[in-house]
Length: 377
Image (cartoon, rainbow, N blue to C red):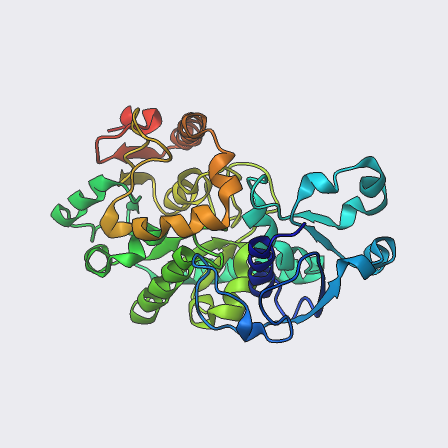
């Protein structure tokens, strides 16, 4: 039986991620007696971890009694079928008939459920529109770089506790690239005065939680005040364009359809497919801008850490982390953090070794638990 909380979680995510210019109607079978009026969206209980931004329903929702739900006919007529409890439908019969329509949004058991929601609309774009979008963003990237002073250094900033050392350094002699939630800290943003902000996480940055919404509002505040560009994977473009047009105007999307390591984004603005923003976007961007790349705020995962590495409280939303865990429990339970940290370092080592083979140099300005950076302190 679909519990009330699971229904509300799925409803609020569907209402946020399924944009009206991509999706027109959603049918939801109901298997419980709700404590609220299904004909009045305002009566739906608000989940604490969902951002309370009073967004009206973006699409037409149709709630029907599951007992009258003709599954086969409705599945046949539906374009896509979002499954909130994957194991219940993972049977050969259904897979053979409708697997291409199934989308796994099982938040408790699917590590990447948030990504399945977040990139849905972008996947609906026809190839011609995607190609035009890529050409436009490649030109936007080149034009912006041409407007900047030429430097022989790039500074890349993570969100670790060592970021506090940034106040003692003048970074005016290089390109400055900051990592996502640093936008929370207006004092540090003003000190660094970055050229680029990079964000690439479906649940931390582009979801419907308190954490993700707070990040985007702080990002909007920075974007309004500075001549700065946001770099994101292209799959998040529809969400930003619809909800945050102010941010979108200064956003450059990086294509995600290619495999490989891309260290000259001026030639090919492509995403290096690695499960960490340092390796996927920060190192490629810094290397694309100059031959000398300096890193600060990448402390790594300490041996006694319980989850990921420790973040600086001034530069991340530690107080809102629980909203992510509640909305996407499968993500936090499905990752071996020690293994993740090891793979992150191995990947960074490969990328920097490749970069060094073509004439680049990398320097870590802080003490770190990341082996690939430790050897370059």
